[in-house]
Length: 372
Image (cartoon, rainbow, N blue to C red; front, side):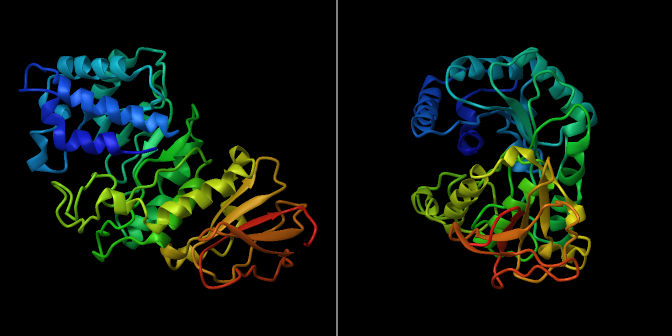
């Protein structure tokens, strides 16, 4: 999934509407969008338009956001126009982005969603809340709401890291009625982290991605690169995002190493029956993340219990509870940095730790098999 349309909408929303009472469609703006959505589809990607930008965290930006400035009737009209214009493309609708969507705001956007999509939208639809906000409970009963999107965001403090693997993403997926869960905005590669003010590297990108896919039943993941999301044409700090760091031009940023690591992630998951995975924290009874949240070992096992997948953010020994899966015989190590299977070894006995091949991050597949 990509946020390019959200970024374009951020900077150029004034082209799509005028004033606080009535919208006026600018044909040039939407012709510009036509070419980009078409190009995404032609390259085998699904576009994910944010129909109404609704950021409330930046006062300087609020006057540019239709979610903050237009009356609901005009918001509905604008969103319906975009749905009608791009409904024949391969798209996933994000009704609104970066708001809070709690209490009165939630009720407001529930009503807007019903007016825009009806009971049976022709495409998947969701909402994109602000950082570390969980809106699954507010929207999961809506007929147009297809999956729970959340944003683990760009924080790097212990509390920020712990929110992803111990907070709502690790718990909210269990609630009824069930909805797929997707992290729509993990930390962007090259974006300055909030606490240490240094750029997130490829390791941080991998860690957030694998955690997201294993603490909830996997449904998808988003990758973001600093300079890509804001479509920079030359080195610059993205518009209205002071402190995020100098971004590379998008044509250079697409070469950041984390993007290739996401290809390796896809290769791994598509080689497995990934849709059968369910979180299995019980496999790691002595969780390293309890002492250091950055060392959290994420674990999931298949619905049948005969194989498991674990992500080690650092290569340290960990003693596992391997009573389940019961027929586990071997461990195969997958290198998330190269996309190569490193080795196959016997699973350690109950009291012996499982040790990754080196000090880097690794993925372990545990299940039945023969040593090779």
